[in-house]
Length: 400
Image 1 (cartoon, rainbow, N blue to C red):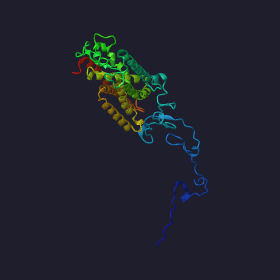
Image 2: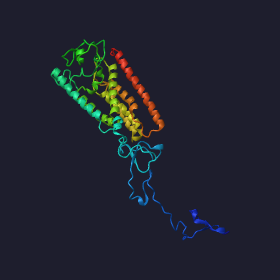
Image 3: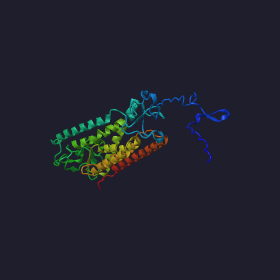
Image 4: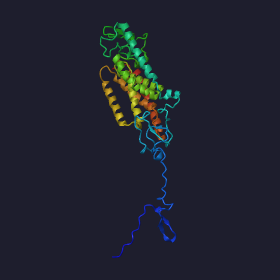
């Protein structure tokens, strides 16, 4: 058989072959100064950047980088961007080091928004001291103490025992949202005698029970506002304070006092308006539950706004939905004003769309859609309140 040709040497690098005149390509000697094998190419240390940590001889002592905080999913939404985990300081922001691809939203001194001027933080947040939440809690406690003192002056007792007030408090017949004190009710004129004025053994007229100097025509419209700061007893007060001093404090710190006051008071008034329109004439309602349900309604909007900042958004949304549903079901029990709860929730939900902050890292199209939704929600709120006021003052006897 014929001899096989000599094997052609395999080369991994084309730089090992150099042209030599007519001799074609020839491999350079190993001691050639231009050969990569004789003098390896120096490997420069990889510089620290947005995606890679420091490496090489400088890995042991890297310069201390200054973090900035990136809220929400960084641009393009592709790995390794990913949404930062919830709970990383501050308020769910994920620190990144190196040169950012976009201008940072927040400086490193603190959570998002704390670099704003003080006057701006007082208006739109965030703030450190929840003034309204703490002050209103003190006002509610003081009003409850006054109710005990006033009831003792009228009856000689501290709490109502005939019939027994299971909220451990005085009688609240004349201390809340009471429709005959606000507008004319043909079935209950001001001269109507009520058998259980303060206790079951006392009688008085509607005019006497409404108090505040009496009136010729029922016009105590403030009873749609003042009952927000009143409670039926100690148990009622403590239950509401659990939400007022936890959820309320956190929301006021995030929104700022003015926006929080608008959310709280509008939800409370809307709840009492819906309750007054749909409840029976002699039903008395008091407490800040409607305002607190407005805060819960806002929380649904807050979760949607910060969806990408939450580690488990679906779980948070489902948990909030279940807890709200349970609270509304419990509101069907006797003695609870579920109409006020529903009215406050509706106002808080749509008002939340109006006053909630812009979504972090929102694009121009997202901002336009957000402002359109704010305008639509504001129109819905105005129509809702207008219908409630018109129906309440025009429907003289909603019990029929």
